[in-house]
Image (cartoon, rainbow, N blue to C red; front, side, top):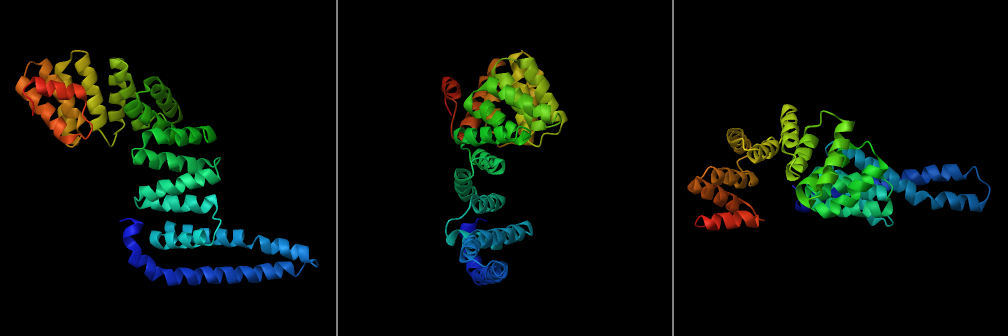
Length: 310
């Protein structure tokens, strides 16, 4: 449930939040007063008091982060809202709130806050990767490239940033050579990362390197890829391209068993049946694909129409 649907809970927490904020600020004022008594000049006192909003904000953010870590995400978000309403919020507060939103699956608000955090602190690797992650999660693949690249530049050992960029390039942007390079770097950092092998298998498949695609997809499955339907579909298609019908069919069936809602595998299965000269089964598979996808491949639409349509 997202923060927008919890307005009642936030209102109930508001009084507590405001009280906490006031207590923190009052305590801070006492600390600042104690510090300034050791300075004889008004200039020293003015400089100390000028730093008060920043220190108070850091205290509130720390408190909010503790609440979030203790699974009181709504309470932590409410505290972060207070710091933003105080004016001139820092990159840290936007980054903290973005991470909290992402934690509860509110990616619309998460991406908005991460973008703001990146504007204020473009050299912060955590904010860049956070933005990379939520952009990919939301399907904003073109927008994700820049923060993923920045995260890599700022932290070259961030294997998830490398893998995310590989995935985008292999599955959504058609930059297969770039994908192979990124996934090879991911594997160099962690040789037992299953997703990197599948993403590279996809890139190899699309460049016609079918045996390499089979090798990588197999390795991904050996490493227990949680999304096994992806390497199974990629490997099945590579087998089919090499004329190995039975292994291809076995992989497609295994992919459907693993995830019957994965649309692409039905398009690939249709191609298998078409190659086997089984037009009725081919049309059924094509139509299953077309009934599931929002962005159909024109070739599959044409194939289905050639066989009488859906």
